[in-house]
Length: 275
Image (tube, rainbow, N blue to C red; front, top):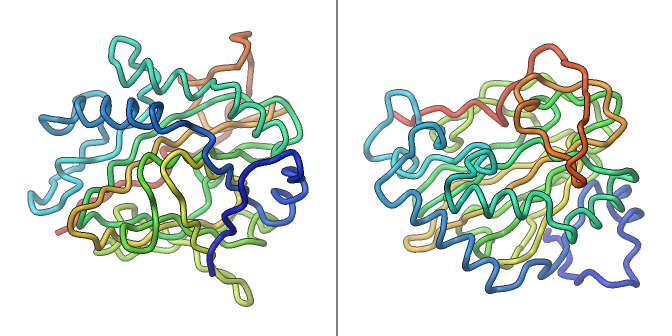
């Protein structure tokens, strides 16, 4: 089953669709020129491999693992001295994304994280998980804005979501198969529910609820990357979240924001080398 390819329009009731399905795809929200600028900047930044202090360098990496050279970059928006930092910060607080988030979340969003995934040919995926297991947002949940930098489909390990799981409690993960997933946490798809592949095109933005079970399979293509710039947000009324995200927090109006610290949490999945 595939997510529908309906473009964003005034006809869409974004809040109703997001509430019912747990996700919404905003088609063509970013232009081809904007996407090319993001893609080129991140590829140039990683031209010599992982960047100390920016890339999530795998512990004891296997040189044959494509992610040894192309690990994800964490909170690039905090690196204002770099082109990738400027661009990540720009799109973290992009007003088009804010407008969509307000409809999805029902209140003003606060930005707390950026990540960039390269996912080159042969790279592992990230098995099913829930983002709020890591962010620990209360009393509600977080929301992701997943920006497709390349077309993302079944061949190159596109994103799948499980509609209906946005209403379930955050589960305690099981051990993932790290031969196919670069993170070690796995959440089982509940009985009676099925994954939906979000067939995305570069410039589409997938918004999804932090409790929604989602994940991806390995990139089985021989020449296609599946790059993505991912932003995480929490509702303005959040009372607490994991300490991991506080230093990276931003508001759209740049106003000070105080959020209590929740116990536990951490980066979105624990990266693990493939051996």
